[in-house]
Length: 145
Ligand code: CA2
Image 1: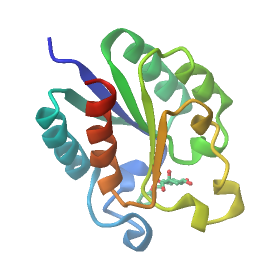
Image 2: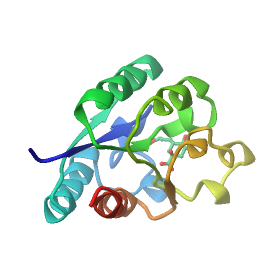
Image 3: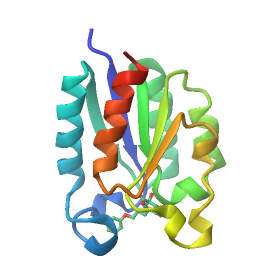
């Protein structure tokens, strides 16, 4: 059976492509899902993309991924900088975890420079716009190959 990767997105990312295009670009999450599905197919993986504004929902999806998915790509949004609970959930997942940020968080406010999720992630992509998701999927192909 084809192994799958879940692409988890945190708060406010449902507005992608609809607000603040100067920071986050004009592509929507539907565009991101299509770009990732294309790369996933090239490297022999399947994927699905989900988004929630609720920390508990993201944690539940990480628990689900323990049973269903070979890898996790996660843009936790602002929970990146605050959520020990998401870090704890990711620590229960056995496969690779890749962290994506659309903007270059290191070029922004100091509070965006620290990530709890980076303590778990095999790799981090920041500042490559939405292309970062497809790049992470390509890397998943290598890590799961
Ligand atoms: O750069 C990223 O991907 C972030 O994870 C985005 C978060 C921010 O809190 C992180 O520090 C960096 C914010 C997501 C907000 O998403 C929006 C997208 C479009 C329009 C408005 C908000």
